[in-house]
Length: 242
Image 1 (spheres, one colour):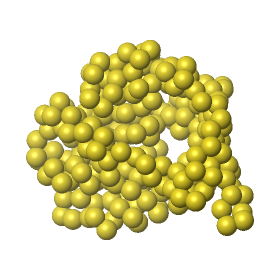
Image 2 (cartoon, rainbow, N blue to C red; image 1 turned 60 degrees about the vertical axis):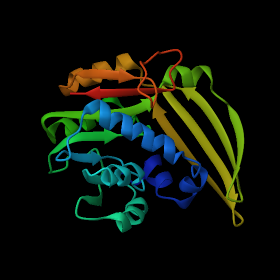
Image 3 (cartoon, rainbow, N blue to C red; image 1 turned 120 degrees about the horizontal axis):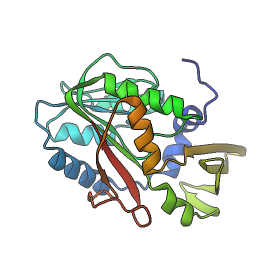
């Protein structure tokens, strides 16, 4: 599949993406994984897919807990960074989630707002169908997304972030059912502009897409401590499909 012009292929494969987001809380990520593992009552024999995995922080931690993990991501540079952590029970590969993998998995993790990048529901449903096709019997999908209504109500339209000797000028808006972030900066005398676009997907929207993909929402949570989802107050929308 040739999608060289998509915003996420351009942006996620640059070093600037990692410079802007280098503050990500590893302790919070590990707490989230611990809570999911306990809630799902995963067995040591379970095989887990982390897609997209970025540089592999969730995959690496799951592997440390003793699980057999495959991390996959569209970004060649991210996978190159992750591969140094490979072992007998941890592997990484370049993969586009719009295409079906061949292996079977007990659990698929789609974490940290790694969904809704596409221009239409048809592609979203195709991704969910691809996930379903590679689930083993009684397998589960965990999807961690934004609570879009809270994001809209608390949107910061303009912001300047100074990180790693770069001044990032950020503009945000909600328009045409997308939450859009425009990122402008100068590095070594050259001006750059990138974009992030995430669809404005509510719980009801996910429920409709799941139904079309042949999936059911089993559980929903509103934060990484797995508290109940509240459309007005929750920071996240975490869904478990079966």
